[in-house]
Figure 1: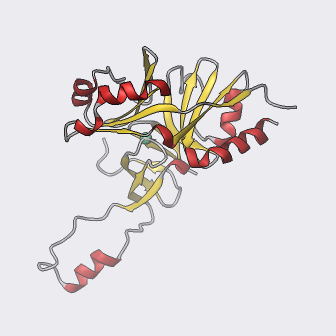
Figure 2 (figure 1 turned 90 degrees about the horizontal axis):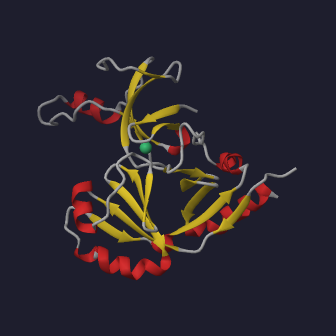
Length: 162
Length: 84
Ligand SMILES: [Zn+2]
């Protein structure tokens, strides 16, 4: 018997790491940032994740990277904030289907129950011992790991869902 | 395993954290204390039989450093002497 899930390795995304106070970041980036801890909002195809105190991640399709870079102007940002393009450091997987939470739970200690980790939740945690970003999406989850672990995580997912 | 309350993330599994050691008293001025007191400060790690105040780093989570009291006899996270 196997889990009723579909796992996919997703194409590279444009990702920018934002650090600093919300006020200064919103003024500089022109994006409205999510307020609640470990939640994300979607704004015209751009996902904004609140992943730590004074810390956000922006994710968008890769073809928007250049436009975003010229809009965010990381090298000209004020000294009290930091904007860093980290697109090629993270590999995303999607795990969707009725048993998606069970598969995530094999490698992640976080409480994934809807009441604790509802829609629009995102948080760093662990996935098969590796630091990972876990996002709830309508049909399951997306998980990002440092790209150097991606083949290993793909292998774990294959074994877990075989 | 203990379930550690992160002020940003809520309760999370110990494996997401890195231990930062016990909270030590403020660093004394080495010129105004005796050699014994200075050596005591440098080398003695607080290790009471009971509640100890500790630092933990949510390194595989949101990155927050936090302080908790843990009872060394039960491994429970407990209220500190000054907690309301
Ligand atoms: Zn945290």
